[in-house]
Amino acid sequence: MKYYEDSVVGSEIIPLASYEVTKEEIIEQGKRWDPQPFHIDEQAADNSIFGGLVASSAHLFSITVWFGSKFPEKWAAVSALGFDQVKLHAPVRPGDVLTYRAVCAGKRPSKSRPDCGIVEYRGEVLNQKEEVVFSLVSAALHSMRNPENS
Image: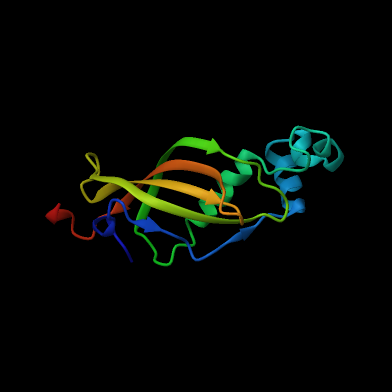
């Protein structure tokens, strides 16, 4: 288990997983959460500015959260605190294989929870061409191994 103290600003964290996006999943997610024609209807999507089906932002956010559970070591995370600077850089299409990387961008002890610290990450989702397709900044509350030493 890794704790707040183990977070090193500037260090990169890469999950041990990739994720292939399917046509069926794009349509299912689109119908449930973002029923735009370019997410749910192949013919309409072909005639859209995207020229085919694309994953919704809600879908990409969910995949990003899933990547957080695939890091090589488990973190003593207590809770997510927020997400900022969420950006869609390029469309994600059926068959795209996504990977994720994050950099620890900052950390500080929690003022309200003396047994925890706040860690900020800058995360990027990349497709099989190594193009960034989605990015965000996240903050999470992590348990401290030795709260009395901070």
